Structure formats: C-alpha cells, structure tokens
Figure 1 (cartoon, rainbow, N blue to C red):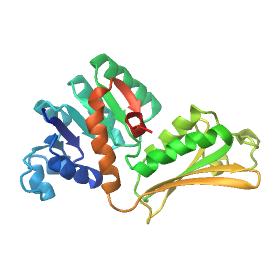
Figure 2: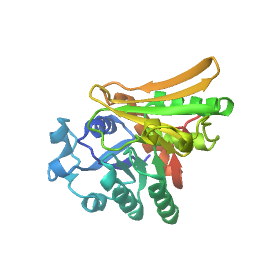
Figure 3: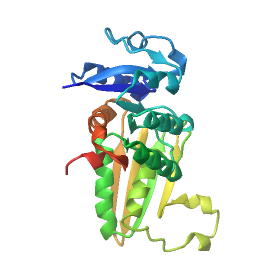
Figure 4: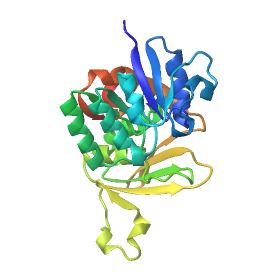
Length: 267
C-alpha cells in the first residue's frame, strides 16, 4: 500500500513538531515537506533533532507544494492559514486544519474551493479526545437545557479570541438551538461587553492569562441545578497528536469541508 505523503505547515511549532515526529514514526505515512519561515532551507530532522527525517523545510507554501503532497496539514497562524489552505486545495492536496481563528465566511470559501477541486478539508478546532467528547456531550445537553454559556481559556499571548474550540462549539450548538437569555442584551444595565460576545446563539467569554494552555467550559444551568463540561489541556502537545493522525488518514475519503474530528469517528 502506498504511503500518504504529507506536508506540515508549522512543523517546527509546539504542536507541529510533536505531530511531525509521530508522522515520521508511522509506517503508513511519509513526511515529505515542511513549512517554517524561520527554518527555511534546513532539513526538518536537523531542526527537530530526529535522525533520519530528511524532509526539506521551505519558507513558503508555493515552494512546499512543489513536492506534491497528498495531505497538507495547516498548523500556523490565522493570518496566513486561509491562503495556505486554498493554495493546497488548488494544487490537488487534501487539507487538515489545526489552526484556529478562521471564521464562518472563511470556511464557506474554503468549502467552495474544496468542492470545486474535488478534495476534502477536515477542520478541527481541537484534536484532543476530551475536547471532541465535550462537544458531543454539549450537543446532547443543549437539547434538554435551554440556558448555557461558553468560557474559553488560553495563555496571555494567544491572539485569536474566541478560540477555535469555542467557535466550533458555538457553531455546533447553534444547530441544536440558541441559548436562552432571561435578560436580553438590549435590556442589560451596564456595558454589554460584560456579558461576552453573542456568537451563533451562545454567550462566549474569552480569558487570556499566564498559566493557562487551552481549556473550555460549557456551562448549562437549570433551576437548582447546573451542568459543567470542561476540557482542560496540559503543557504537552501529545493529546492533539493522535487526533491529528486520525484526521490525516481519513481526510482523503472526504469531499468538501467537514468540521470536527467526530465527523470521521464512530460513536
């Protein structure tokens, strides 16, 4: 069986480096190229101290795509992610998106290009299994509990807010219903910002402080009872790697845009 040829954008980063190591170790995957502007012109194995990993590191997506990957993994920053994704699709690659910060308009455009190219895009706000389960459980809870709010936590240097995980959760809950507000935002006495942002029918609050990595709470309330669902990650990137590997192996079976790792999981 032919190995899946992969290019990782952001391969030298926190999550990308852990993923690159595991791709290199997998017998059915082949890491053929990487993108990192700060390490362009080097060999990825030298950058990550992985003996035998000979993938070249390029500074631009245009150069990297000349290696003809089957799957392009996007793990960089929101300001360049969409350009990377669209370039990869138009070049004939399937795409796995781990970068957060893209909006619904961005994903509509990506979906259009993916369908036109006949390629699949799997956009995952969070590859960790506990985050996937939180979203599934939250969808169930929203069917029975009309009041909820979302709080996302991250380190103080994270620029995008809300996080991709919180955005994806709000999007999924909107397909169940909108959360109920007993006091509408128009009736609120005081700064409306104190209630967070109304995002696709959910109130979403973003906390950015040192000491956090990535966490999210979905809080549901009923008279005299409440349900708190929490995903909380540690400092290691390992929780995200297994989910990303699953996405890489499955994205080639898809056409168009698919949101969430559970779209290729069995429950």
